[in-house]
Length: 176
Image: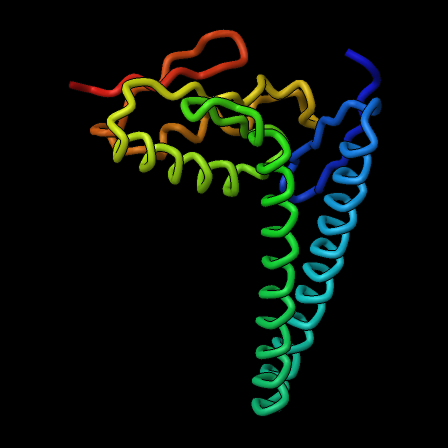
C-alpha cells in the first residue's frame, strides 16, 4: 500500500494516515498539518493568557483579568476554527468517493468524528437507510495503539442504533 506518513496532536492523540504516493494527499497532509500546528500554537497561547488572567484576578486587577479572559476566549475560538478547517479537509478527503452508506472517520479527533457520525446517522434516518458502515480503524495509528472512537459509542443512549464490530469497520443496525 506504500509508505505512510502521520501527524499527531498530543492533547487529542489523533493520527492522520496518508499514503505518500499521491501529490493530492501530500498537499492535503501539508495543509492539515499546518492547520493542526496553528491550532496547537493557539491553544498554548490561550493557556498562557488564561494563567495571566488568573494571576491578574488574584492580584486584584480585575479589569486586566477581564481583558485577558476575552483574549483567551478569542484564541480558543481561533483554535477551534483551525481544527474545524482541518477536520473538513480530512473528512472530505476520506469520504469523497465513498457510497452514501459508508463513513470513514480516519484522521479526525474523537469529538470531530462523533459530530460527523451524528450528522451521518441523522442523514441515514431521514433517508430510511437500514445500515451504515462506519470505518474507524482499530487504533494502529494512535500513539498508544488503542482505538479512540469505538469506545465513545457508549455515549449514545440505549435507544440509539446498535454497533457491531467487524474487522476495522463498524456496522450500524437500526432497530425496527
